[in-house]
Length: 248
Ligand code: PGA
Image (cartoon, rainbow, N blue to C red):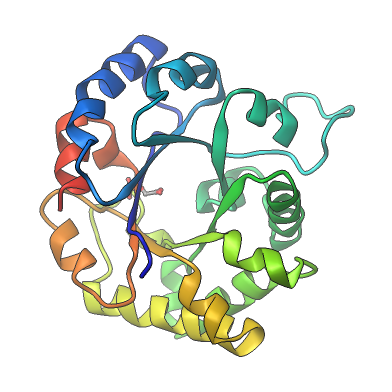
């Protein structure tokens, strides 16, 4: 059985004080939850939040990472630096990074390899644009993104990833894929992994849905057979909403 994972992606929002209050507000409410809870924070919050989440159910994630350990890469953050701050997960290949910061399937692949070798779990984001969906290319796009992201990854490490299927047209737009549509693409992603890596690995990888998830649609989404959690942007910014999503 895969444990559901609810991850909040704060993107470039909030302040350290807000984040500390947020964690204080939710952490005691999570003692009995059966889901894994992850906060994907701006880098500058991590050091302070590391102490705040200590001993709670909340795990910390970064929203990006470089593929080298160190070097002349102005403005970048490496895996060893994230580990110093207690980071256990990192989002790789979010569509906003692909769109605005030249993230490509190749750089995603390098980051996935580095994260896995550094014992940081990559949350690999895949998803199609509206145009690609309308041209019925969704399945081609997501399978290419996944297989490329995993190229050269040691077979025995593949099960240590998380995948987030996020149709780009559903991110921050208030439009969600219907739960059935999302489930169909996620089932296809699992099947793609099964063909490449076998049933055991494909069954062990959590695959989340992301794109305008909120307290009122989370139950329908989580009722789908293949959906193992959610990557939540806007609705993760308020503690009350995020808690409702966790307690779907
Ligand atoms: P959203 O963002 O929930 O605001 O649509 C999701 C994401 O970008 O991960």
